[in-house]
Image (tube, rainbow, N blue to C red; front, side, top):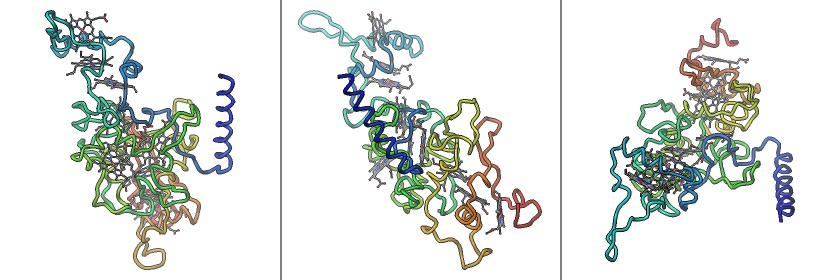
Length: 324
Ligand code: HEC
Ligand code: HEC
Ligand code: HEC
Ligand code: HEC
Ligand code: HEC
Ligand code: HEC
Ligand code: HEC
Ligand code: HEC
Ligand code: HEC
Ligand code: HEC
């Protein structure tokens, strides 16, 4: 049996590697699963599944709440009078006290913290909370604006699902789910009061990403990166591609590499009448410039990657000339 499944696994591996080799510059979704949680839906669980993550013994976890949350024994250990004697209600099956809506909502997202929109409480700095006042751009769409899906570049470049979508993980061959399932499957996607947390039905296709930025704003997105050579140092542009968001120029293009033809490039013809961002971004196609040739990412005092000023001409064109 073991032997057979090993052979099947090897066959599968060679198939997947085969595809990758034939289409060298096309990363087959799904994205790797080293950072954050496994991209899946976890809303149909058993007690054993819960213990798989929370540990086999959860006494201490609960009993410390007697002091920290001032709970009494009877909050959890309820007594029922059944046919003439007092008996404890079940106190081991997690789902007796914590609820999930099987197939629809996970126990973690029914809770108050998630319902209040505090995603970062559990997901950490991989996301930003909707109401924390963080920066979301307000300038118009351009040839580099990412989309949630249906990227307009080669093979769908220019969108999240260019890398994050259905597929079997290359390393473990376990299934990775698509973005719609991972988000809707929390339960938040079934609550009609919460659609606007993630969607703006009024936005045109080119600006749909802005509602995603309520949690995936430039600050968190440009800080998601694996240290690919494990030297304890992330160098934007100098890591292996497809291991995060800022490691390589290919990563920038995965989100930002939509097609120029989708967007008008400014008023009139000729160099000077071009919209200034477009003027510069056309140099990506015309001169093979990389995003990081102009946009420098550095760590600020909090250790967070931020962009150096890219609006002031003299920041790059030092002598007032066309050549920086
Ligand atoms: C994939 C791993 C995983 C599984 C499976 C899992 N949990 Fe969790 N759970 C977590 C993490 C991570 C947190 C957040 C950090 C923490 O509080 O420990 C959490 C938090 C919680 C919380 C605190 C919620 C809050 O609002 O503060 C409860 C209650 C909980 N889990 C119950 C369950 C139950 C019941 C199950 C089974 C239906 C389950 N968990 C399955 C990983 C998991
Ligand atoms: C916040 C809920 C909560 C509170 C409050 C609580 N318990 Fe528990 N208790 C549990 C859970 C859940 C288990 C089962 C743990 C498991 O199966 O891993 C448990 C298990 C136990 C057990 C069995 C231990 C074992 O695993 O054999 C005893 C005894 C117990 N509790 C006594 C108490 C007493 C006494 C108090 C009050 C001083 C109390 N508990 C308060 C949730 C609670
Ligand atoms: C008898 C009822 C009961 C059972 C059974 C139970 N819990 Fe809880 N659990 C509670 C209560 C009550 C709380 C406190 C909720 C609150 O903060 O108001 C709690 C809190 C938690 C927390 C958050 C702890 C914290 O530090 O805030 C986790 C995680 C958790 N439970 C996981 C589990 C898991 C996993 C199981 C099953 C193995 C389980 N619970 C079984 C009643 C229960
Ligand atoms: C109490 C902790 C907790 C809070 C708060 C929380 N989550 Fe989660 N989330 C988890 C845990 C644990 C998992 C993995 C198990 C599961 O799906 O329940 C998860 C999984 C997810 C996933 C799928 C996993 C993946 O990698 O794609 C998404 C999407 C998600 N959460 C979105 C949210 C959003 C949006 C919020 C805020 C509105 C939020 N979460 C708040 C604990 C939490
Ligand atoms: C060029 C490929 C690529 C594109 C395009 C891309 N990502 Fe990622 N993303 C990755 C990789 C690789 C990781 C790290 C995965 C890992 O190791 O777990 C990652 C991780 C993440 C994480 C951390 C949590 C997790 O589940 O791993 C979030 C959140 C995320 N991406 C959001 C987005 C959003 C939102 C978009 C679209 C705006 C997007 N990504 C587009 C490659 C990409
Ligand atoms: C926690 C975030 C979240 C919430 C809340 C949410 N969605 Fe989504 N939804 C997503 C993501 C992520 C996708 C995948 C987007 C993509 O690939 O374009 C998606 C995709 C969709 C799609 C298909 C793609 C599209 O944009 O046409 C529809 C339709 C949709 N959602 C409707 C809803 C409705 C209706 C609600 C409220 C009942 C809702 N969603 C709530 C995150 C969410
Ligand atoms: C309310 C907050 C919130 C909004 C808005 C939101 N997401 Fe997410 N997103 C999350 C959380 C939380 C995770 C899980 C991060 C982790 O793995 O811990 C996540 C993960 C992701 C990932 C990484 C892959 C995965 O499934 O884990 C992608 C890609 C992504 N989101 C795309 C989108 C897109 C596209 C939209 C807009 C349609 C969107 N998100 C809107 C909270 C949000
Ligand atoms: C995961 C997707 C993703 C990846 C990968 C990514 N970005 Fe972004 N970036 C965004 C999003 C979303 C915005 C906001 C766009 C908007 O709303 O118009 C943004 C905005 C920017 C901005 C403008 C910031 C501001 O202050 O307004 C610059 C510059 C930028 N990205 C450069 C890069 C460079 C350089 C790379 C590669 C090192 C890169 N991005 C990789 C998603 C990504
Ligand atoms: C030749 C230099 C150069 C290159 C290469 C370049 N940019 Fe820019 N970018 C700029 C300048 C300059 C601006 C600001 C122009 C202004 O506001 O006058 C800008 C603005 C932006 C903005 C804000 C858009 C707006 O409409 O204001 C984003 C997002 C961005 N760049 C991302 C990228 C990404 C992603 C790449 C790689 C595909 C890239 N840039 C390549 C010079 C460059
Ligand atoms: C973030 C750095 C940066 C900023 C800020 C910047 N530029 Fe540039 N610009 C460049 C680079 C790099 C080139 C390409 C030089 C080359 O061809 O090698 C360039 C090229 C140009 C060109 C020639 C375009 C072409 O088609 O060859 C013009 C004109 C120009 N910039 C004007 C401006 C003006 C006006 C501003 C301010 C509104 C500005 N730039 C701000 C980096 C920048």
